[in-house]
Image (cartoon, rainbow, N blue to C red):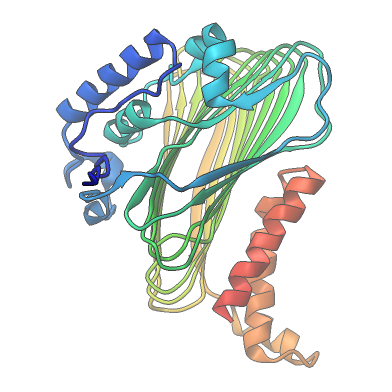
Length: 406
């Protein structure tokens, strides 16, 4: 007589930390589970969920994934660089993981789901680059979600010492076009003094799946962080990105490109936190919308008391390819210091008849002309990654989306 073991449902069953993980991490997961259970679900009254689709937060019936895959593409690394699956890093570099793992408060609305991620995470990527080391080629990770009603909780933790440089690419996709999966991903990016860290996430899940991605970036003195997100897949995706500039000379580029079609919905929330004087941040989000798709952008620039001479920009641009699409943009500023230069803005527009006429006069059919213009609209954000390999991968994913739209 055989016994069938029921899958572990993510909302009802407490987490089981894998054997071999340190005790402190097991305790952390149990605490996170308690926090998840006790934290109320978002409501319409929550400002961070304004215009959001709360129906997409029904994760009933999802189970911990059993057949999803994670693949690492690691270039030749200089001596001293540590690049490991998160589960190995917990055993060999536990103190470093413990110091930086999910230390920042999740402040853009998904605290409940960040707690769920912390409680259920079992896999991911850990990168540590010591002082003065430069990693030439990007470290690439592919997360493939498989199984109907499967839930995955990948985590990326990247830490640089002083005057180091590294780039990391996370790719999220589905094993097939039909299984309705859920991915709740989190990344911690800690950029040491004088360092540069470039992070890129490409989301190409199938149209039946959903995703929540939370980014927490901390930028040190005279350091530079670049965080880019591309959304082309999933039925619904929620992106929350926080960049905290902790010391003088810190710089952060927050970039995104989203191409939505049919009934897809992309919900984007950002927070540029200037906690020190003489810091700089620049945000550029570009959304291209087809069909009855919908995008939401809500961004805040916060300048702390004493963070004088802050220089911060925030721009969201929406290209409406059809009248049935919907975009909502809510940029904001909160300034508590002097001698600052901050600006924000948002635009929504369609392609003008003059642009189409110009291309038609050169023998390009109207539909192809519209696609060319939309493609060019996306390129501006991609070019600001300033990493040839990452730009090539992103542009290939952009081309796949436009080809699918037809």
